[in-house]
Length: 246
Image 1 (cartoon, rainbow, N blue to C red):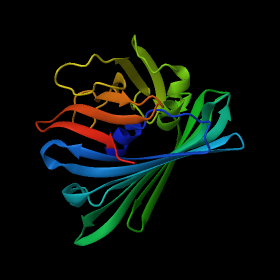
Image 2 (cartoon, rainbow, N blue to C red; image 1 turned 180 degrees about the horizontal axis):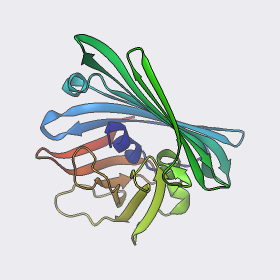
Image 3 (cartoon, rainbow, N blue to C red; image 1 turned 45 degrees about the horizontal axis):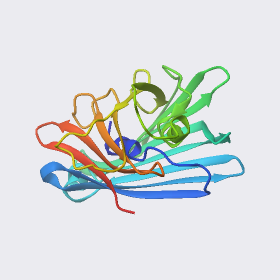
Image 4 (cartoon, helix red, strand yellow; image 1 turned 180 degrees about the vertical axis):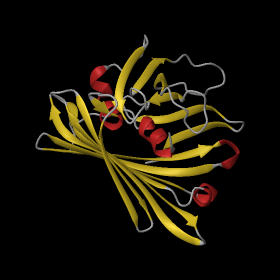
């Protein structure tokens, strides 16, 4: 899991009634301060939708990561206010040193959904300077959502936004084995200053930034947009915090 995976989870839910919904977030990491920013947009027109996310590192994190940037895109149709993905794409771009030269490296993964057959078709493209490789394969598992569509659908699945019992969802782009995401109630303790909002605990079941299991504490506004989230216990440096700024 990388910076954008965290951002995707920060962007939890939103209504699909409006034509365009956008949000901007900053990400901070303990003693390192601000390490990244991300923007997202949902566009719905003629019963079709498109979600995009662009995230990039900033400051020292930008230097250490080779100017890392990530793009995510989900496209599909709207059925009864539920987003049904046809296509999901993840692109990761960065620069690295190779044989004394600085070259561009880009990893692209495209996922095509076949909901009737409950199958997923995957296309992997790797670019390293002028070298390109392409691999096509059947997905290891099927899920009805990708990571973006799931969280924009979440408010339809839980209209009150109140999590009172454990729930499990599956989405392409989450846990690499089966796409599993666990959502649990969150009871605020003295260590948090969240006094308002709808609170939940999200377990991605994967190591995000060297955290043990990708445990996120999330605070939602009444409209369903995530206003703040915390990724717990990352190495020895504390928590990664995401906060809506626009």
